[in-house]
Image (cartoon, rainbow over all chains, first blue to last red; front, side, top):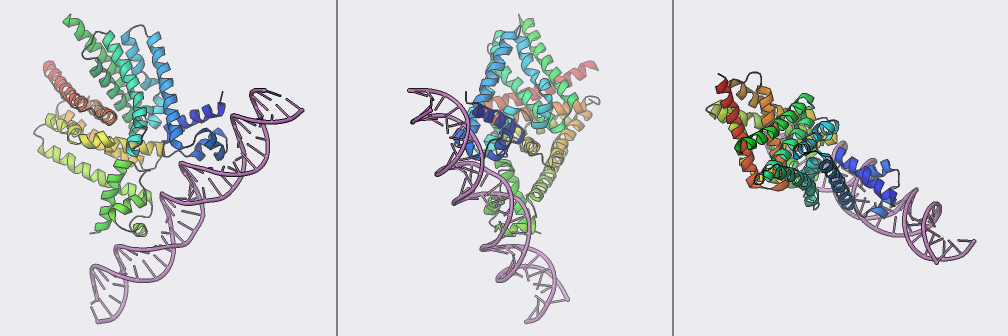
Length: 192
Length: 192
DNA sequence: TACAAATTAGGACAAATGTCCTAATTTATA
DNA sequence: TATAAATTAGGACATTTGTCCTAATTTGTA
C-alpha cells in the first residue's frame, strides 16, 4: 500500500546519496517520481520528514543486509569479510559519491541537522554487527575496539576512493584489511 | 594589500568548512565580513571564484605547514608523526566538522563541481609529503602505498571522530598508527 | 588641491526554494 | 450506485539565492 510514498522515499534515497541532501530539491524528486510538486505535500509535510523516512528506510535495508550476512556467513571471520567487501561490490558508486553513511552523517553535521543522531544509527548497526563477530572470535575485551578499527578503515578507503578513483588502491587496502584480520586471529592462537 | 579580499577568503574558508560550500551564501559571508552584498561583486564575480580562491588559500597554507614540518622534523619518522598528530591537534574541529579536505572533496563530488580536481590537490600535497618521508626511510617501492595507507587511516578516523565524538577512539587510533609505523620500520631492519 | 581609480552601499532582478492552499479526480466502501 | 476518503494537479506565497547595476564615497596620485 501507499506506492507513491514508497517511490518518493526510494528516489529521494538515491538523490540524497548522489547529490547530497541540501542540494536535492522537492522539484528534483518530483521530476523523477513524475508527480506534481503540490502532491508532495500530501505525503510529506516538510523536507525533513522525507529525510527521516529515507534514514528509516536505510536502517531497515541495512538491517536486512546484516541479517543476511549473519545467516549466510559460515563463520565470524567470513562475516567480517562480507563487510569489508562492500568496498569492492559498491566500488562504482563509492568512487562517484563516497560512502552513503559517511557522507550523510558528515553533511548533517555541517547543516547542524536534528536528524544526525538518527543517521548515526547506521554506523551503529555496522559497528554492532562487527563487534558481535569479534566477540564470537573470542576477542571479548577488544571486540568494540576492533569493530571501530575496521569501520574506520572502510570509511577511510571510501573517502580516498572517491578522491582518487584508484581501483588498485581499493583492492590493495581490502587485502591489507583481510591480512590484519588474519594476523589478530593468528596472534590469538599463539597466545592459547 | 587588498585587505577586504583577503578577509572574504579567510571568512569563506571558515564558513565553507563549518557549514559546507552549498550551504554558505553570499549573505552569510557578507554578514561576518560586515560588507554589503553588492560590494562582494567587486571582489568576486561568482561564488565559484570564491571557492577557487579559498582552495588556493588552503593549498598555500598547507604547503607552509608541510614545509615547516619538513624543516622542524628531526627525521622522516617524526615528520610522519607530525601528520598523524593533526588528528589530536585539530580534534575539536574534526569532531564538529570532519576533515576540511575530505569533506570538501566529498561535497564537490556530489555537486559535480568543476573545482573538485583543484581541491584534490590538497590530498596530493599530503600524500606527496608522506611518500617523500617513506622514501627517505628506505621504502622506495612501497612509499606511495604507505603514504596512501596513512592518509586513508587519518580520513577514516576523521569521519568516525565526527560521527561518534569519542576521544578515546581517536587517541587509540593515533597510537595504532604510530605502532604501525614502528612495525614496518622494525621489519625493514630485520630484513637488512 | 584636483582628478582618476578603487572601493563601497544599496538595491534591482530573475530564478529557485520550501511550504501551503484549493479544486478536481480517482479510489474505496457502504 | 451513491458517498466518503484518498490522491492528485496546479499554482500561490514569501523568502532566499546568485548575479549584476548604479551612484556615492574613499583613496591614492599628479
